[in-house]
Length: 540
Picture 1 (cartoon, rainbow, N blue to C red):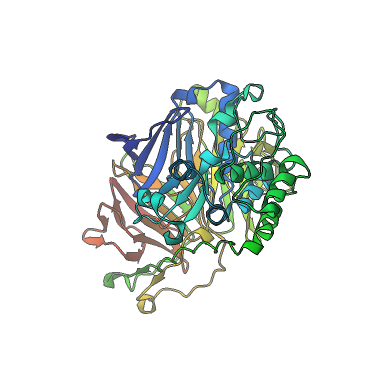
Picture 2 (tube, helix red, strand yellow; picture 1 turned 120 degrees about the horizontal axis):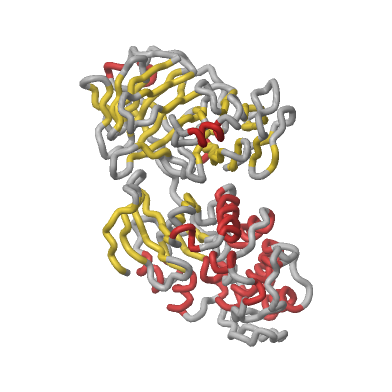
Protein backbone atom coordinates (compact mmCIF):
# COMPACT_ATOMS: atom_id res chain seq x y z
CA UNK A 1 0.00 0.00 0.00
CA UNK A 2 1.29 3.38 -0.97
CA UNK A 3 1.28 6.05 1.71
CA UNK A 4 -0.46 9.17 0.37
CA UNK A 5 -0.45 11.62 3.31
CA UNK A 6 -2.29 14.34 1.44
CA UNK A 7 -5.66 16.05 1.71
CA UNK A 8 -8.65 16.12 -0.60
CA UNK A 9 -10.70 19.33 -0.56
CA UNK A 10 -9.86 20.02 3.12
CA UNK A 11 -12.20 17.19 4.10
CA UNK A 12 -10.33 13.90 3.65
CA UNK A 13 -6.75 12.98 4.46
CA UNK A 14 -5.69 10.18 2.11
CA UNK A 15 -3.71 7.58 4.05
CA UNK A 16 -3.14 4.50 1.90
CA UNK A 17 -4.00 3.43 -1.63
CA UNK A 18 -5.42 -0.06 -1.96
CA UNK A 19 -3.88 -2.34 -4.60
CA UNK A 20 -5.73 -4.45 -7.17
CA UNK A 21 -8.78 -2.18 -7.48
CA UNK A 22 -10.87 -2.16 -10.64
CA UNK A 23 -12.79 0.82 -11.94
CA UNK A 24 -10.79 3.61 -10.31
CA UNK A 25 -8.51 4.15 -7.31
CA UNK A 26 -9.50 3.31 -3.73
CA UNK A 27 -7.96 5.03 -0.70
CA UNK A 28 -8.22 4.52 3.01
CA UNK A 29 -8.79 8.05 4.26
CA UNK A 30 -9.57 10.00 7.41
CA UNK A 31 -12.67 12.17 7.45
CA UNK A 32 -11.19 15.26 9.09
CA UNK A 33 -14.60 16.62 10.09
CA UNK A 34 -15.61 13.57 12.13
CA UNK A 35 -12.38 11.70 12.78
CA UNK A 36 -13.72 8.58 11.07
CA UNK A 37 -11.79 6.29 8.72
CA UNK A 38 -13.62 6.02 5.38
CA UNK A 39 -13.02 4.64 1.92
CA UNK A 40 -12.64 7.18 -0.90
CA UNK A 41 -12.90 5.90 -4.46
CA UNK A 42 -11.74 8.15 -7.27
CA UNK A 43 -13.38 7.49 -10.63
CA UNK A 44 -12.25 10.63 -12.48
CA UNK A 45 -14.27 13.65 -13.68
CA UNK A 46 -17.94 12.77 -14.29
CA UNK A 47 -17.02 9.27 -13.02
CA UNK A 48 -15.49 8.59 -16.45
CA UNK A 49 -18.98 7.82 -17.79
CA UNK A 50 -21.37 9.09 -20.41
CA UNK A 51 -24.60 10.75 -19.31
CA UNK A 52 -26.91 7.70 -19.24
CA UNK A 53 -24.66 5.29 -17.27
CA UNK A 54 -23.65 8.16 -14.98
CA UNK A 55 -27.31 8.82 -14.15
CA UNK A 56 -27.80 5.08 -13.63
CA UNK A 57 -24.89 5.05 -11.16
CA UNK A 58 -26.24 8.11 -9.35
CA UNK A 59 -29.75 6.65 -9.05
CA UNK A 60 -28.40 3.32 -7.79
CA UNK A 61 -26.27 4.96 -5.09
CA UNK A 62 -29.13 7.21 -4.01
CA UNK A 63 -31.34 4.12 -3.71
CA UNK A 64 -28.70 2.37 -1.61
CA UNK A 65 -28.38 5.43 0.64
CA UNK A 66 -32.08 5.05 1.41
CA UNK A 67 -31.54 1.51 2.71
CA UNK A 68 -29.58 1.64 5.98
CA UNK A 69 -28.81 -1.86 7.18
CA UNK A 70 -26.34 -3.04 9.85
CA UNK A 71 -24.75 -5.60 7.49
CA UNK A 72 -24.44 -3.38 4.39
CA UNK A 73 -21.45 -1.11 3.77
CA UNK A 74 -22.73 2.44 4.14
CA UNK A 75 -22.32 4.81 1.17
CA UNK A 76 -22.00 8.39 2.36
CA UNK A 77 -21.44 10.53 -0.70
CA UNK A 78 -21.33 10.50 -4.48
CA UNK A 79 -19.74 13.57 -6.05
CA UNK A 80 -20.42 13.12 -9.76
CA UNK A 81 -18.53 16.19 -10.99
CA UNK A 82 -15.32 15.15 -9.22
CA UNK A 83 -15.95 11.42 -9.60
CA UNK A 84 -15.72 10.57 -5.89
CA UNK A 85 -17.54 7.92 -3.88
CA UNK A 86 -17.13 8.07 -0.09
CA UNK A 87 -18.19 4.97 1.80
CA UNK A 88 -17.82 3.21 5.11
CA UNK A 89 -14.42 1.64 5.70
CA UNK A 90 -14.59 -1.88 7.08
CA UNK A 91 -11.98 -2.44 9.78
CA UNK A 92 -11.33 -6.09 9.10
CA UNK A 93 -10.57 -8.63 6.40
CA UNK A 94 -12.25 -9.67 3.18
CA UNK A 95 -13.76 -13.11 2.88
CA UNK A 96 -11.73 -13.53 -0.30
CA UNK A 97 -8.44 -12.98 1.57
CA UNK A 98 -9.56 -15.41 4.26
CA UNK A 99 -10.29 -18.06 1.65
CA UNK A 100 -6.98 -17.46 -0.10
CA UNK A 101 -5.15 -18.04 3.18
CA UNK A 102 -7.10 -21.16 4.19
CA UNK A 103 -8.03 -22.52 0.73
CA UNK A 104 -11.35 -23.71 2.11
CA UNK A 105 -13.43 -23.48 5.28
CA UNK A 106 -15.08 -26.12 7.38
CA UNK A 107 -18.88 -26.33 7.49
CA UNK A 108 -18.86 -24.97 11.04
CA UNK A 109 -16.69 -22.00 10.03
CA UNK A 110 -18.75 -21.17 6.94
CA UNK A 111 -22.08 -21.30 8.76
CA UNK A 112 -20.62 -19.33 11.64
CA UNK A 113 -19.32 -16.57 9.35
CA UNK A 114 -22.36 -16.30 7.12
CA UNK A 115 -25.13 -16.49 9.73
CA UNK A 116 -26.30 -12.91 9.02
CA UNK A 117 -25.93 -13.10 5.22
CA UNK A 118 -29.23 -14.85 4.28
CA UNK A 119 -31.36 -12.12 5.88
CA UNK A 120 -29.19 -9.44 4.27
CA UNK A 121 -29.60 -10.93 0.78
CA UNK A 122 -33.35 -11.25 1.28
CA UNK A 123 -33.42 -7.59 2.32
CA UNK A 124 -31.73 -6.61 -0.97
CA UNK A 125 -34.21 -8.72 -2.93
CA UNK A 126 -37.18 -7.06 -1.22
CA UNK A 127 -35.73 -3.64 -2.04
CA UNK A 128 -35.04 -4.59 -5.69
CA UNK A 129 -31.27 -4.18 -5.34
CA UNK A 130 -29.21 -6.51 -7.58
CA UNK A 131 -26.86 -8.76 -5.64
CA UNK A 132 -23.24 -7.87 -6.52
CA UNK A 133 -21.22 -10.47 -8.41
CA UNK A 134 -19.06 -12.24 -7.59
CA UNK A 135 -20.48 -12.28 -4.08
CA UNK A 136 -17.27 -13.60 -2.52
CA UNK A 137 -15.36 -10.41 -3.38
CA UNK A 138 -17.97 -8.17 -1.73
CA UNK A 139 -18.01 -9.67 1.78
CA UNK A 140 -15.93 -8.41 4.69
CA UNK A 141 -15.52 -9.41 8.32
CA UNK A 142 -15.49 -6.33 10.56
CA UNK A 143 -13.77 -6.26 13.96
CA UNK A 144 -13.50 -3.64 16.66
CA UNK A 145 -11.02 -0.82 16.08
CA UNK A 146 -8.48 -2.24 18.56
CA UNK A 147 -8.24 -5.60 16.76
CA UNK A 148 -5.42 -6.28 14.25
CA UNK A 149 -7.22 -7.90 11.27
CA UNK A 150 -4.13 -9.67 9.88
CA UNK A 151 -3.75 -11.61 13.13
CA UNK A 152 -7.33 -12.88 12.85
CA UNK A 153 -6.74 -14.44 9.42
CA UNK A 154 -4.54 -17.13 10.93
CA UNK A 155 -6.47 -17.56 14.19
CA UNK A 156 -9.12 -20.20 14.77
CA UNK A 157 -12.64 -18.83 14.51
CA UNK A 158 -13.30 -20.21 17.99
CA UNK A 159 -10.90 -17.55 19.30
CA UNK A 160 -12.20 -14.64 17.26
CA UNK A 161 -13.59 -11.65 19.18
CA UNK A 162 -16.95 -10.10 18.31
CA UNK A 163 -17.33 -9.46 14.60
CA UNK A 164 -19.91 -8.44 12.00
CA UNK A 165 -20.23 -9.58 8.39
CA UNK A 166 -20.54 -6.67 5.95
CA UNK A 167 -21.67 -6.79 2.32
CA UNK A 168 -20.71 -4.05 -0.11
CA UNK A 169 -23.85 -3.78 -2.25
CA UNK A 170 -22.23 -1.60 -4.92
CA UNK A 171 -20.46 -3.28 -7.82
CA UNK A 172 -19.37 -0.78 -10.45
CA UNK A 173 -18.34 -3.54 -12.84
CA UNK A 174 -21.65 -5.35 -12.49
CA UNK A 175 -23.64 -2.13 -12.58
CA UNK A 176 -22.14 -0.75 -15.77
CA UNK A 177 -21.03 -3.87 -17.64
CA UNK A 178 -22.78 -5.10 -20.75
CA UNK A 179 -24.94 -8.06 -19.64
CA UNK A 180 -24.28 -9.92 -22.91
CA UNK A 181 -20.54 -9.62 -22.42
CA UNK A 182 -20.35 -11.21 -18.97
CA UNK A 183 -17.85 -14.04 -19.19
CA UNK A 184 -17.28 -14.47 -15.48
CA UNK A 185 -16.55 -18.08 -14.53
CA UNK A 186 -18.46 -19.50 -11.60
CA UNK A 187 -18.33 -22.84 -9.85
CA UNK A 188 -21.79 -23.68 -11.21
CA UNK A 189 -23.83 -21.58 -13.61
CA UNK A 190 -27.45 -22.39 -14.33
CA UNK A 191 -28.03 -19.70 -16.92
CA UNK A 192 -25.11 -17.93 -18.63
CA UNK A 193 -27.34 -15.00 -19.54
CA UNK A 194 -27.11 -12.11 -17.11
CA UNK A 195 -30.64 -10.93 -16.24
CA UNK A 196 -31.26 -7.21 -16.33
CA UNK A 197 -33.75 -7.63 -13.49
CA UNK A 198 -33.55 -9.72 -10.36
CA UNK A 199 -34.64 -13.28 -11.11
CA UNK A 200 -36.85 -15.20 -8.74
CA UNK A 201 -34.56 -17.19 -6.50
CA UNK A 202 -31.45 -15.34 -7.67
CA UNK A 203 -30.32 -14.63 -4.09
CA UNK A 204 -30.48 -18.26 -2.94
CA UNK A 205 -28.51 -19.35 -6.00
CA UNK A 206 -25.77 -16.81 -5.32
CA UNK A 207 -25.65 -17.87 -1.67
CA UNK A 208 -25.36 -21.52 -2.75
CA UNK A 209 -22.53 -20.73 -5.15
CA UNK A 210 -20.73 -18.88 -2.37
CA UNK A 211 -21.10 -21.80 0.03
CA UNK A 212 -19.99 -24.25 -2.66
CA UNK A 213 -16.79 -22.30 -3.21
CA UNK A 214 -16.06 -21.71 0.47
CA UNK A 215 -16.44 -25.41 1.22
CA UNK A 216 -13.91 -26.45 -1.42
CA UNK A 217 -16.06 -26.90 -4.53
CA UNK A 218 -13.96 -26.99 -7.71
CA UNK A 219 -14.28 -24.55 -10.58
CA UNK A 220 -16.41 -26.04 -13.34
CA UNK A 221 -17.07 -25.07 -16.94
CA UNK A 222 -19.69 -22.39 -17.49
CA UNK A 223 -22.15 -24.75 -19.23
CA UNK A 224 -21.89 -27.61 -16.73
CA UNK A 225 -25.13 -28.96 -15.30
CA UNK A 226 -23.54 -31.39 -12.88
CA UNK A 227 -23.20 -31.13 -9.14
CA UNK A 228 -20.18 -32.71 -7.47
CA UNK A 229 -20.92 -33.53 -3.81
CA UNK A 230 -18.76 -31.79 -1.23
CA UNK A 231 -16.87 -34.04 1.17
CA UNK A 232 -17.25 -31.46 3.93
CA UNK A 233 -21.05 -31.79 3.83
CA UNK A 234 -23.07 -34.83 4.78
CA UNK A 235 -25.62 -36.28 2.40
CA UNK A 236 -28.39 -34.04 3.68
CA UNK A 237 -26.40 -30.85 3.14
CA UNK A 238 -25.38 -31.88 -0.37
CA UNK A 239 -29.02 -32.66 -1.13
CA UNK A 240 -30.02 -29.12 -0.13
CA UNK A 241 -27.39 -27.52 -2.40
CA UNK A 242 -28.17 -29.91 -5.27
CA UNK A 243 -31.87 -29.10 -5.02
CA UNK A 244 -31.17 -25.37 -5.09
CA UNK A 245 -28.86 -25.50 -8.11
CA UNK A 246 -30.40 -28.19 -10.30
CA UNK A 247 -33.94 -28.92 -9.21
CA UNK A 248 -36.35 -26.79 -7.19
CA UNK A 249 -34.94 -23.41 -6.03
CA UNK A 250 -35.78 -22.08 -2.59
CA UNK A 251 -38.10 -19.10 -2.28
CA UNK A 252 -35.57 -17.04 -0.34
CA UNK A 253 -32.19 -17.25 1.32
CA UNK A 254 -33.50 -17.76 4.85
CA UNK A 255 -35.51 -20.85 3.84
CA UNK A 256 -32.38 -22.24 2.16
CA UNK A 257 -30.38 -21.54 5.31
CA UNK A 258 -32.93 -23.24 7.56
CA UNK A 259 -32.89 -26.35 5.36
CA UNK A 260 -29.10 -26.41 5.39
CA UNK A 261 -28.89 -26.04 9.18
CA UNK A 262 -31.47 -28.76 9.63
CA UNK A 263 -29.58 -31.10 7.30
CA UNK A 264 -26.41 -30.66 9.39
CA UNK A 265 -28.17 -30.87 12.77
CA UNK A 266 -27.31 -34.55 13.32
CA UNK A 267 -23.59 -33.81 13.05
CA UNK A 268 -23.64 -31.58 16.18
CA UNK A 269 -21.76 -28.95 14.22
CA UNK A 270 -24.32 -26.20 14.31
CA UNK A 271 -22.26 -23.03 14.81
CA UNK A 272 -22.78 -20.80 17.82
CA UNK A 273 -24.46 -17.46 17.43
CA UNK A 274 -21.83 -14.76 16.74
CA UNK A 275 -21.22 -12.63 19.84
CA UNK A 276 -22.86 -9.25 19.99
CA UNK A 277 -20.99 -5.98 20.33
CA UNK A 278 -20.72 -4.29 23.68
CA UNK A 279 -23.12 -1.41 24.33
CA UNK A 280 -21.88 2.17 24.10
CA UNK A 281 -21.87 4.19 27.30
CA UNK A 282 -24.39 7.03 27.48
CA UNK A 283 -22.50 10.36 27.22
CA UNK A 284 -23.02 12.85 30.02
CA UNK A 285 -22.74 16.63 29.57
CA UNK A 286 -22.37 19.50 32.00
CA UNK A 287 -23.90 23.00 31.91
CA UNK A 288 -21.32 25.65 32.86
CA UNK A 289 -22.18 27.35 36.16
CA UNK A 290 -22.72 30.76 34.52
CA UNK A 291 -25.53 29.40 32.30
CA UNK A 292 -27.68 27.59 34.86
CA UNK A 293 -29.98 30.63 35.03
CA UNK A 294 -30.04 31.13 31.24
CA UNK A 295 -33.36 30.22 29.62
CA UNK A 296 -34.65 31.66 26.32
CA UNK A 297 -37.44 29.55 24.80
CA UNK A 298 -38.21 29.97 21.11
CA UNK A 299 -39.04 28.13 17.89
CA UNK A 300 -36.62 29.76 15.42
CA UNK A 301 -32.86 30.16 15.76
CA UNK A 302 -30.90 32.34 13.34
CA UNK A 303 -27.12 32.47 13.38
CA UNK A 304 -26.03 35.51 11.40
CA UNK A 305 -22.57 36.61 10.39
CA UNK A 306 -21.02 39.80 9.04
CA UNK A 307 -18.36 37.83 7.17
CA UNK A 308 -19.22 37.33 3.50
CA UNK A 309 -17.59 33.90 3.42
CA UNK A 310 -19.75 32.61 6.32
CA UNK A 311 -23.28 31.56 5.41
CA UNK A 312 -26.03 32.27 7.94
CA UNK A 313 -27.75 29.27 9.51
CA UNK A 314 -31.52 29.08 9.99
CA UNK A 315 -33.04 26.51 12.36
CA UNK A 316 -36.77 26.14 12.64
CA UNK A 317 -38.82 23.79 14.81
CA UNK A 318 -42.49 22.91 14.84
CA UNK A 319 -44.67 21.00 12.41
CA UNK A 320 -43.99 22.90 9.16
CA UNK A 321 -40.95 23.55 6.99
CA UNK A 322 -41.17 25.60 3.78
CA UNK A 323 -38.96 25.48 0.69
CA UNK A 324 -39.06 28.16 -2.01
CA UNK A 325 -37.46 31.30 -3.39
CA UNK A 326 -39.00 33.66 -0.83
CA UNK A 327 -36.61 35.22 1.66
CA UNK A 328 -39.00 34.08 4.41
CA UNK A 329 -38.86 30.39 3.38
CA UNK A 330 -37.05 28.08 5.76
CA UNK A 331 -34.87 26.82 2.91
CA UNK A 332 -34.27 29.52 0.30
CA UNK A 333 -33.85 28.06 -3.19
CA UNK A 334 -32.05 30.53 -5.40
CA UNK A 335 -30.06 29.65 -8.49
CA UNK A 336 -26.62 31.19 -8.08
CA UNK A 337 -24.60 33.17 -9.04
CA UNK A 338 -27.04 36.00 -9.36
CA UNK A 339 -27.35 37.20 -12.95
CA UNK A 340 -30.17 37.82 -15.40
CA UNK A 341 -30.30 34.21 -16.59
CA UNK A 342 -30.27 32.68 -13.12
CA UNK A 343 -32.76 35.25 -11.81
CA UNK A 344 -35.15 34.23 -14.59
CA UNK A 345 -34.70 30.56 -13.64
CA UNK A 346 -35.24 31.39 -9.97
CA UNK A 347 -38.48 33.16 -10.85
CA UNK A 348 -39.78 29.85 -12.21
CA UNK A 349 -39.93 28.73 -8.58
CA UNK A 350 -42.78 29.69 -6.27
CA UNK A 351 -42.23 31.79 -3.19
CA UNK A 352 -43.24 28.70 -1.23
CA UNK A 353 -42.74 25.83 -3.64
CA UNK A 354 -42.96 22.79 -1.38
CA UNK A 355 -44.48 22.41 2.07
CA UNK A 356 -43.15 19.81 4.53
CA UNK A 357 -45.16 18.79 7.58
CA UNK A 358 -45.09 16.21 10.35
CA UNK A 359 -48.04 13.88 10.58
CA UNK A 360 -48.22 11.08 13.16
CA UNK A 361 -44.43 10.88 13.43
CA UNK A 362 -43.85 11.00 9.66
CA UNK A 363 -42.48 13.73 7.39
CA UNK A 364 -44.83 14.49 4.49
CA UNK A 365 -44.48 16.74 1.44
CA UNK A 366 -47.04 18.67 -0.56
CA UNK A 367 -46.61 20.73 -3.70
CA UNK A 368 -47.25 24.45 -3.26
CA UNK A 369 -47.86 26.52 -0.16
CA UNK A 370 -50.84 24.60 1.18
CA UNK A 371 -53.38 26.91 -0.45
CA UNK A 372 -52.50 26.25 -4.09
CA UNK A 373 -50.08 24.47 -6.45
CA UNK A 374 -46.58 25.73 -7.16
CA UNK A 375 -45.23 27.21 -10.35
CA UNK A 376 -44.07 24.44 -12.71
CA UNK A 377 -44.61 21.68 -10.16
CA UNK A 378 -42.26 19.66 -7.94
CA UNK A 379 -41.28 16.02 -7.65
CA UNK A 380 -39.87 13.64 -5.06
CA UNK A 381 -37.66 10.86 -6.44
CA UNK A 382 -39.16 11.44 -9.87
CA UNK A 383 -42.79 11.25 -8.71
CA UNK A 384 -44.85 14.47 -9.06
CA UNK A 385 -46.07 16.01 -5.81
CA UNK A 386 -49.62 17.31 -5.50
CA UNK A 387 -51.14 20.01 -3.27
CA UNK A 388 -53.85 17.76 -1.81
CA UNK A 389 -52.25 14.32 -1.36
CA UNK A 390 -49.13 14.42 0.85
CA UNK A 391 -46.24 12.10 0.00
CA UNK A 392 -44.35 10.44 2.86
CA UNK A 393 -40.60 10.87 3.17
CA UNK A 394 -39.47 7.68 4.97
CA UNK A 395 -35.81 8.16 4.12
CA UNK A 396 -33.45 10.22 1.98
CA UNK A 397 -35.14 11.65 -1.13
CA UNK A 398 -34.34 13.86 -4.13
CA UNK A 399 -36.63 16.91 -4.34
CA UNK A 400 -36.77 18.86 -7.63
CA UNK A 401 -38.48 22.25 -7.84
CA UNK A 402 -39.88 23.27 -11.22
CA UNK A 403 -37.22 21.24 -13.07
CA UNK A 404 -34.78 23.98 -12.03
CA UNK A 405 -33.48 23.34 -8.52
CA UNK A 406 -32.59 19.96 -6.99
CA UNK A 407 -31.73 19.00 -3.44
CA UNK A 408 -31.41 15.90 -1.27
CA UNK A 409 -33.68 15.77 1.78
CA UNK A 410 -31.94 13.76 4.51
CA UNK A 411 -33.98 12.91 7.61
CA UNK A 412 -31.73 11.92 10.49
CA UNK A 413 -33.33 9.12 12.47
CA UNK A 414 -33.22 9.63 16.24
CA UNK A 415 -32.95 5.86 16.74
CA UNK A 416 -29.47 5.94 15.15
CA UNK A 417 -28.12 8.38 17.73
CA UNK A 418 -27.22 7.17 21.24
CA UNK A 419 -28.97 8.67 24.23
CA UNK A 420 -27.35 11.38 26.31
CA UNK A 421 -27.97 13.20 29.60
CA UNK A 422 -27.01 16.34 31.52
CA UNK A 423 -25.60 15.76 35.00
CA UNK A 424 -26.68 19.10 36.50
CA UNK A 425 -29.97 19.56 34.64
CA UNK A 426 -31.89 19.76 37.94
CA UNK A 427 -30.05 22.98 38.73
CA UNK A 428 -31.08 24.62 35.43
CA UNK A 429 -33.97 27.08 35.82
CA UNK A 430 -35.45 26.55 32.35
CA UNK A 431 -38.81 25.00 31.45
CA UNK A 432 -39.69 21.34 31.84
CA UNK A 433 -40.05 19.09 28.81
CA UNK A 434 -43.43 19.66 27.17
CA UNK A 435 -43.07 18.53 23.54
CA UNK A 436 -43.75 15.00 22.38
CA UNK A 437 -40.73 13.12 21.02
CA UNK A 438 -40.30 13.00 17.22
CA UNK A 439 -38.67 9.97 15.55
CA UNK A 440 -36.16 12.23 13.79
CA UNK A 441 -33.32 14.42 15.03
CA UNK A 442 -33.40 16.85 12.12
CA UNK A 443 -33.98 17.21 8.40
CA UNK A 444 -30.94 18.34 6.45
CA UNK A 445 -31.23 19.86 2.96
CA UNK A 446 -28.25 19.43 0.62
CA UNK A 447 -28.40 21.14 -2.80
CA UNK A 448 -27.09 19.01 -5.66
CA UNK A 449 -26.17 19.45 -9.33
CA UNK A 450 -24.01 22.45 -8.47
CA UNK A 451 -26.73 24.56 -6.85
CA UNK A 452 -25.70 26.88 -4.03
CA UNK A 453 -27.47 28.40 -1.05
CA UNK A 454 -27.70 31.84 0.50
CA UNK A 455 -28.07 30.35 3.96
CA UNK A 456 -28.28 26.90 5.52
CA UNK A 457 -31.82 25.80 6.39
CA UNK A 458 -32.37 22.97 8.88
CA UNK A 459 -35.59 21.58 10.30
CA UNK A 460 -34.55 20.85 13.87
CA UNK A 461 -36.47 18.41 16.04
CA UNK A 462 -33.86 17.51 18.63
CA UNK A 463 -30.27 17.49 17.28
CA UNK A 464 -28.23 18.66 14.27
CA UNK A 465 -24.66 17.40 14.52
CA UNK A 466 -21.62 18.86 12.81
CA UNK A 467 -17.84 18.75 12.62
CA UNK A 468 -15.06 20.97 11.25
CA UNK A 469 -12.98 20.35 8.15
CA UNK A 470 -9.28 21.19 7.79
CA UNK A 471 -10.14 24.84 7.09
CA UNK A 472 -12.25 24.90 10.30
CA UNK A 473 -15.52 25.24 8.36
CA UNK A 474 -18.75 23.66 9.60
CA UNK A 475 -19.67 20.33 7.98
CA UNK A 476 -23.14 18.96 8.76
CA UNK A 477 -23.21 15.35 9.90
CA UNK A 478 -25.49 13.35 7.57
CA UNK A 479 -23.81 10.00 8.25
CA UNK A 480 -26.73 8.81 10.35
CA UNK A 481 -24.64 6.99 12.95
CA UNK A 482 -22.31 7.62 15.88
CA UNK A 483 -22.12 10.82 17.85
CA UNK A 484 -21.05 14.04 16.15
CA UNK A 485 -18.12 16.11 17.45
CA UNK A 486 -20.62 18.89 18.25
CA UNK A 487 -24.31 19.66 17.76
CA UNK A 488 -27.09 22.18 18.03
CA UNK A 489 -30.01 20.87 20.09
CA UNK A 490 -33.64 21.76 20.61
CA UNK A 491 -34.45 20.60 24.12
CA UNK A 492 -37.13 21.68 26.59
CA UNK A 493 -38.22 24.47 24.26
CA UNK A 494 -34.73 26.05 24.08
CA UNK A 495 -31.80 25.94 21.68
CA UNK A 496 -28.54 24.47 22.95
CA UNK A 497 -24.96 24.05 21.75
CA UNK A 498 -22.82 21.13 22.90
CA UNK A 499 -19.18 20.25 22.31
CA UNK A 500 -18.03 16.65 22.37
CA UNK A 501 -14.66 16.68 20.69
CA UNK A 502 -14.15 19.65 18.37
CA UNK A 503 -10.44 20.19 17.71
CA UNK A 504 -10.87 23.96 17.87
CA UNK A 505 -12.12 25.82 20.98
CA UNK A 506 -15.72 27.12 20.96
CA UNK A 507 -15.96 30.67 22.31
CA UNK A 508 -19.31 31.90 23.67
CA UNK A 509 -19.50 35.63 24.34
CA UNK A 510 -16.20 37.30 25.17
CA UNK A 511 -14.68 34.91 27.68
CA UNK A 512 -16.59 31.60 27.93
CA UNK A 513 -14.91 28.56 26.42
CA UNK A 514 -17.25 25.64 25.81
CA UNK A 515 -15.05 22.67 26.60
CA UNK A 516 -15.38 19.03 25.68
CA UNK A 517 -18.35 17.42 27.41
CA UNK A 518 -20.14 20.74 28.01
CA UNK A 519 -23.51 22.00 26.80
CA UNK A 520 -25.20 25.37 27.23
CA UNK A 521 -28.49 27.09 26.32
CA UNK A 522 -28.17 29.80 23.69
CA UNK A 523 -29.40 33.36 24.34
CA UNK A 524 -30.31 36.27 22.03
CA UNK A 525 -27.47 38.61 20.98
CA UNK A 526 -24.79 36.12 22.07
CA UNK A 527 -21.75 35.80 19.86
CA UNK A 528 -20.38 32.33 19.32
CA UNK A 529 -17.19 31.41 17.52
CA UNK A 530 -17.02 27.90 16.04
CA UNK A 531 -13.90 27.14 14.03
CA UNK A 532 -13.51 29.92 11.46
CA UNK A 533 -17.10 31.14 11.91
CA UNK A 534 -18.40 33.90 14.19
CA UNK A 535 -22.17 34.18 14.58
CA UNK A 536 -24.63 36.44 16.34
CA UNK A 537 -27.54 34.55 17.92
CA UNK A 538 -31.16 35.53 17.27
CA UNK A 539 -34.03 33.57 18.81
CA UNK A 540 -37.69 34.07 17.93
